[in-house]
Image (cartoon, rainbow, N blue to C red; front, side, top):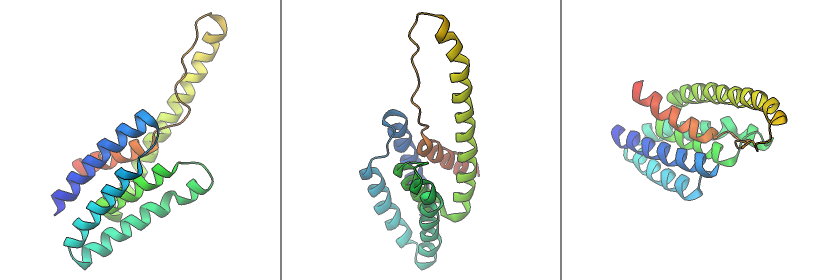
Length: 153
């Protein structure tokens, strides 16, 4: 049962990363498929597993809900963290959220620094500068961090 949940987490992480990096969204069909599969695996584990992983689902959803309400993150980020909570439980959810957020902050600093370094060059040359998207694929980073942390932890 544990292996099945981890395999589902890795599949979700890879698919979520692809869609978030490529399209900057997490499709609802992916979240629904993961939710149904994850809940089926959890229910096979009994009431103890349901309470543990159900708390992970609720906690994952509630962690990013305030940021979503204030337009700081997208809905896909909230749904992805909820799926991570469902598949890892509350203990690994916290670690995934912490390390994923730190990594996302580092990516944001790199993006800010690169824009700051590129802008003087753009003013002095005739070449058109190709700008990266302004958003950060937070769901992809969270999902890949959860998969990595689950693998090494």
